[in-house]
Image 1 (spheres, protein in one colour):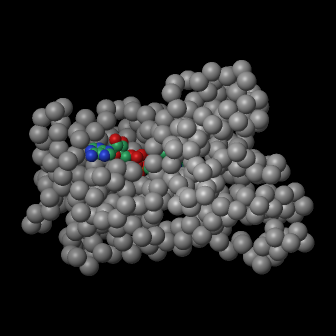
Image 2: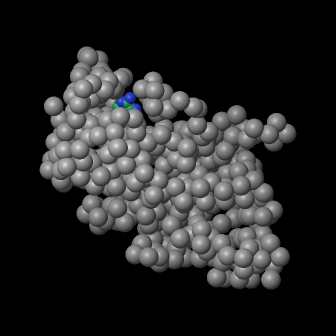
Image 3: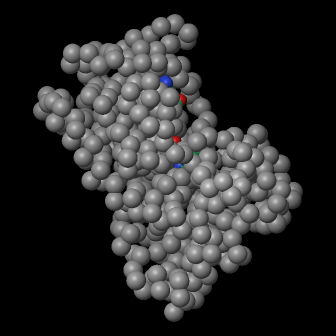
Length: 403
Ligand SMILES: Cc1cc2nc3c(=O)[nH]c(=O)nc-3n(C[C@H](O)[C@H](O)[C@H](O)COP(=O)(O)OP(=O)(O)OC[C@H]3O[C@@H](n4cnc5c(N)ncnc54)[C@H](O)[C@@H]3O)c2cc1C
């Protein structure tokens, strides 16, 4: 009987395992993949993510393998460009790191193992039953049936919505962002800035160029599927990325002498935290399994790490108190809502600006006249907590009316 079994060894699952093992709990981590494994992603670590990784003593080694980013470029649909440094905010670093997931996820998992976590793979979990005072996790280990028991289970299965529906935790079909990415070598015009492009992309959405070296980049696209029949959208994110690369003059020039480093891969993103369930009995959710991905930018590694650190603290206290009552379990949801609900509702609201390319273009244009707006826009993109309070009437007036 373990204290906690965690299903999924992405950033969320491995970080939760690390924080629980540090408190002396017996933790078993399971994943259907053998590690190191890749995960389709833009590979961008925001200042929020770096803060948790620093707390886990992983920052220095990731800075060695990652590509440091000091600024952002926004290329609006109507051609104007904003270039801005990443502001230093409330104890967050003024940088991003781009670390391919093949390396990142394995480093975080290794960190958990060095804190005392046990790891089994490949284990595909097929069901979790709640029994009297414990949970029973069933799956296949190397094709053979496997069974694990624990006082609590954490589901950190990312966008695997089928698993959560099957457990009866998720009883609606969340709206997702469709996203795809490819790696390219020999890309020209890369710098220490990440690029976000709004020209020639299905809106609401954007395309990105995230450098991983002086000459190589992770290039991708993400967009919301619209219900409006008159808005024609590509059938898949992979098709949208191919179309953007073929049509957009800027990316065509950057890729003129470049080679793809493998196929383009697509994957959905869950961004429905404001309405998402976060627990059911003794099963708790962290990261993307709880819909914790920015509805504005699609960044979710940071929220996966943060929610797991919070879960680690909360669950350790439950064990210390020996209290697994319904009220205590419900307190987990309240803790996540207190921490994330406000910023998610705000980011969901702002996403609507994307639908209106004119407003986005105005915002980018306004930053050239009013440089103070650059920090506001960049902070919003970084998902900083206080971004909402930066949208003042004066900022709105500058964007909309230009004075
Ligand atoms: C194209 C794309 C680009 C993105 N770009 C960025 C970015 O630049 N920055 C950023 O912060 N976020 C980005 N994201 C979002 C980010 O990838 C996710 O939010 C993040 O990986 C969530 O972490 P997680 O630990 O919750 O889940 P995941 O990283 O998805 O990990 C889930 C794990 O669970 C395992 N698993 C699933 N089902 C089972 C099962 N039944 N049994 C056993 N194991 C199971 C999987 O194998 C996996 O290892 C992007 C996403 C996409 C699709």
